[in-house]
Image (cartoon, rainbow, N blue to C red):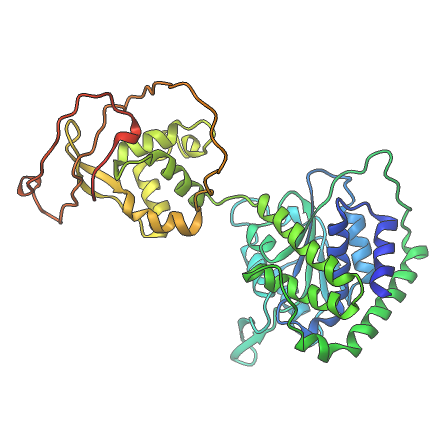
Length: 406
């Protein structure tokens, strides 16, 4: 069987971290020979924490077995546009990709191209000065990127991610020489192309059962179709690889600063219905494991906080707090409920009984803060126009004692 032959070649020259990683690469290579059948072109990301982890060698094998490989260590967006703009696009292979995406906003055009090329019928539009008309350039093509460290998250979100690691002394591989070992790989590539080409109609109509959802399902669907066509043990192995590699990718995804801020705000709120802006910032900047204290000379500021939360339609408002705070700018818990549920849902509570923990008093510069009967003020409305009842309490307070209604 062709997939078994490809599996044997991969494991001869490269040590991959798991059996699921081997299966994922095998299926991705085979899928490159049926690009005409796919609605989505999955990316293959080969990443390593350090050099000498085998990523370039793996890319050599991918090059030898893929459909019309076009390998480069650097590429301009214009060159990639022209390479992809054909009915039978090549398989784009980028080595040392970590040198391309360095720094915030680096090579945004190339990243946008790679993101758009994941889905069919997402052309780039350029103005042709010679013909004086708009030109639509196809971007659809399968692509593999190898480098040290993570690729941009928008690329990894569309990719089968392989996390390479350095071989131990007991892990042995055969040396790879292009002149000697390249021809057998090219012969296998030709066999894969013939097999996939003869089954393009079947692959195009395939609707495989998917263990994943949303974009992950789009990425893995071509690989599932290849596995189902191959039959035997491959359908089960493909679904196992999809679940394992997708879970590894999600577990190592870098959370965006905005989502991290949402989660940290939930911790800062405690059980309060509202919180003054200055106290929220104090608690965020005080967390030694959070990045907020390093957001600037004075840490996270009200302006930066508002800018980050604005993406979720959360904004501060004037709220009447109990003395000694009184009327002040702050945030209401009700504005966070929907974003918390959508972007950083709280973990399910454990059913195991919690071990006894002795009471630890809480000491904070803000421990005397209490909110009673929180009321939103309309623009230009004087706080004296509102009639509220405040209950005097003398018991010690903690951050979780902030109560009220927005």
